Image (cartoon, rainbow, N blue to C red; front, side):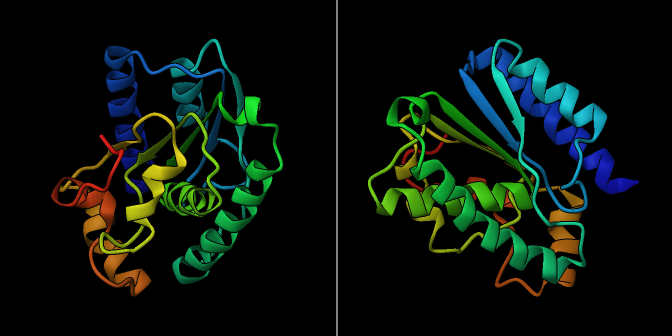
Length: 190
């Protein structure tokens, strides 16, 4: 299916980038996208664990196996839960944490980082792979402040899912950041 192919392409692009950029973490959590939220999809998970091969890895489950509008609302609620979980961690563990979110998982990571920044809490790094969040969302301007290292955003203006399905199915306010990130870069974001 095209969503799986898109996921694989995004993760492969990230793997190539990470290999050349020397992305490293001591603890990395993968927050999956729409319809892949209960169990890791094998190819995506293998790609993720390849990038973070010397890392303590975690698959972050959430309730996204729903129709798009419900999944998007659940993603926004999950962002609050994720931020609260991270706030409760000891600072030395947060300082080693990298969050990687794909599609709606990228939305969760972006919103969680924005919430963390309001409390002056930072993790090591956030990585957004084709994030399904409106490009004009006010939390995008705050998300980089929840990360010690610059956030990495992998976006593709030709992403068919984010370019067409996202807008039609979700009723979102504007195009997806994951299909247009290059046009509007917040602080502390590569």
